[in-house]
Length: 308
Length: 226
Image (cartoon, rainbow over all chains, first blue to last red; front, side, top):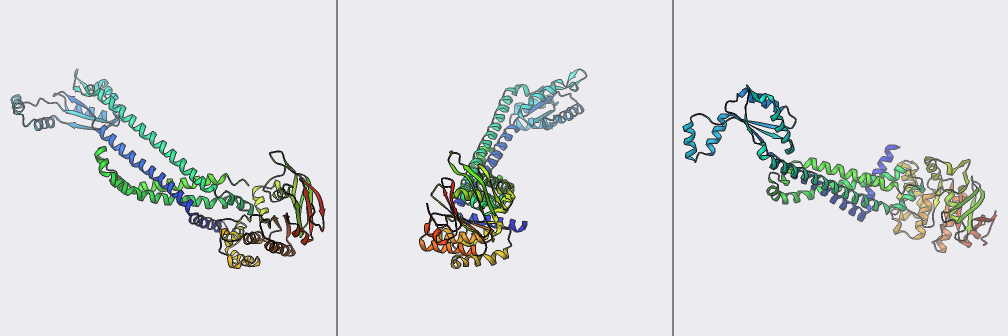
């Protein structure tokens, strides 16, 4: 009996979707807009993330060692730094590499190259370039370097200088900007999601309000709650399903139209490529959230009229 | 079979729709309830189908107090009662066939039974040619026939008809009443409320006359007299 009823409920849900043409059309339209906005927020969030991480990537702290610092000590420090949770990556530049880079940079300046030849020895020290996960974490990395006693070998500090203090102001400001950009992005996303969910919920509620009389009749004929509610929930799921399909389709031309512009603006991310690369995840998110939104909205909207 | 015991109903605006109504209806009876608008006819029916609860008093179906039934039992009970309203109250998005089939689905009947019974009952009320029409494609009399077909499809113990002829012309009125009489002759209890003097007088059955929420007359072979 149960399976017969489930089959009937699903069938009725489809029939109702088909027969209440204008109402279904309006609901699907609102659902499509909702899901389109949610999809855009996902892509917008990714674009913002990539822009911010690009900015963050430009920041690092360089530790310059004295020329007489031993590789072993540098390695020890590197290991100690890697163990810090704040550290994302460390790049080691040896003395030789530093000299080669320097020569390369100044190869057109004969004065510098000839003075280097004059010295004969390599005047440059090795260095470590440390990147933190968040800009705000450089401060604590710098503090760690200050307090680390392993840097003092035989009474002499092997570190020549740490450039954090020169860049401190810029890094601090950047950290603040990144933080508030992330917060703002999150707040806008939340706000939009809340608005579109409310709009969809109310549209579906209106669609069911029209059927208020019908629900009362069904009650008086002796239909159980779930037998009345079932088809509405199915219809809501169909709204979500069709809406997700349409939103996914509409997003294709939109993102490809914006692709080049976003690549120039955000630097790095092309929303069109991002959309195509993550097509299935985005489609799945829209599909699931659309169907869930439709089902829950219908479920709640019918409840009000079931009290006969 | 149906027994109302000192039933009173007070609406929130303090009007007394019913005050201390007591009467019994036996199996197989055809009872007409008459009275002016606002006399309490529809309220009595609402009490009987558990659409609304009395302020005081009890309504019994056999030995069960229907206003003390749980949700499931109320649904079971409603499936034993066929209801016909003045405006038909068909489901607008369903065809004549589907409206009747819905009542059978709700009662848990098999698809084969539905396919076999629905065309038959539509033929009984003379609508075999309009099986697939939607309510808005039917006339008032035709809608009322579908409503009756829906009410009788599950072989209910009682048919409750709330002014079923209120919107109909005289010819359709006679047809509808004849259908109800036929159903009654087959053993189903019928409770009818009406304004129509001719209908009541022609029936020659029991008449309960209401005025301002009280029973003023209850006659075995009554006439419409207000």
